[in-house]
Image (tube, rainbow, N blue to C red):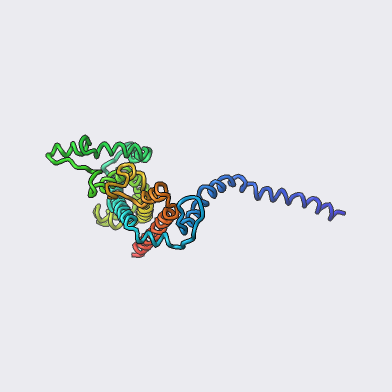
Length: 307
């Protein structure tokens, strides 16, 4: 009788234990449900869609890698990929070093006051709070051939007016300049955070050993900024190959596809020409390119760390 009463007292605890185990998952279930419906399902659906020549609602015929083979043979896609690569190189080779120089300037004796540094940080973050539409409208006025601020400044030096957004050779460089203005601030904050994590004692020890400013930067600061450099370069690469807003709002991909990016081409194929399967293949080609480039950068930085 005592054993039966003991078992009777233990059995009700099992549902209570299960309730405690599964209750936390019930609270996070709405989040994962929304993620599955609006993120996971579109990703998986687009993968299957890329294997069909889907042009709308109706019967679909499986063509395997046909869309991906067509991409390699599509001169417009290859041209858009070349333009996007040019934009990415501008982000990596111009924007990132410039952001590092700004962070070094704010961190060094050029801006000695902490209050001034806080003001600079706020100023650098302001473009991130501005809508891309506003930025595009502002720079469309700056680049205007007849009344733009840039051409009026050049006219003061006796130089001819230039159609920055109308000439094929200048459209993408103009978009890159706008991108630099937009993103150099946030990237400089990344570098500034990395510089703040470097102990002052290391720089002081290098100075005592006779290292100058340039030597201290090259042999002490830059190696210790490797994680920040890796983060900035990888995220610049990924977001550069996903660029859509600025070139679309400034030039629409023109003139003559001079500023056409891969995502703009995806938008045109999917939402203007309704080639849904082809657009899905374009999207997954971008994902593959981003993953491959990120792996290459990780390998390069790993070898740099071993040197």
